[in-house]
Amino acid sequence: ECSSGSTSNVDAVRISHCATLPCTVTLEDKPKVEIDFRAAHDSKTLRVRVLGAIGDIAPQPFPAFKTDACNFMGVSCPLKAGDKYTAKFELAMSPTFPPVAGKAVFKGQDAAGEFFCFKVPVELKH
Image 1 (cartoon, rainbow, N blue to C red):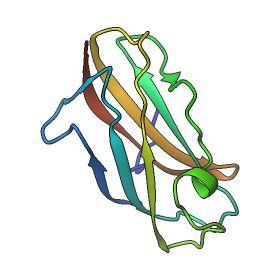
Image 2 (cartoon, rainbow, N blue to C red; image 1 turned 135 degrees about the vertical axis):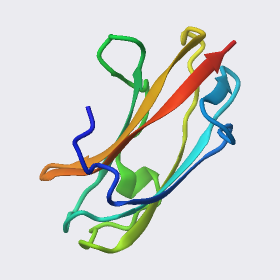
Image 3 (cartoon, rainbow, N blue to C red; image 1 turned 30 degrees about the vertical axis):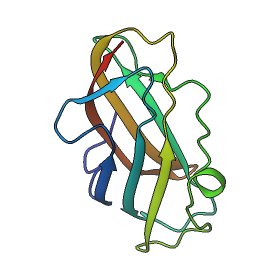
Image 4 (cartoon, rainbow, N blue to C red; image 1 turned 90 degrees about the vertical axis):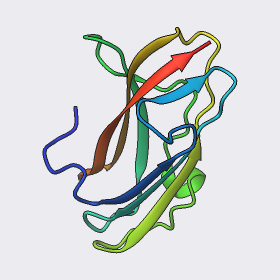
C-alpha cells in the first residue's frame, strides 16, 4: 500500500494509452511511463516497482520488470534531496494476463524509505 503523502514528491505522470481513466491496455500494447519526481532524500539508489492489484488479492509485482531506476530508467544517481528527476520505462504485457479491471501501483523507494507511490486504474483487454 501507498503511505499518506506518497504523491507529494510527484510533479507529473505521463502514461501512453491513458488519455482518460481507466487506462485501457491490450496485451499487444507496451505502455510508456514517465514519472517526474523530486528526491525525498539523498540516495545512491532508487528502485521503481510496478505492481498489479485486482480485487482483494495482494498486489503482485509486474513480471520481468527491471526495478533499478539508475541503470534502466534514465535516472542520474546518486540522487540529491529536492532535485528533480524523471524515471522513464516501458511495460510489456504478458499473454497470461487476464482481461480484467484493476489498479497499477507505481512505487519508488530505496533502503531508507519511499520516494513516491501512486495507483492508476487500468482496464486490460484482450
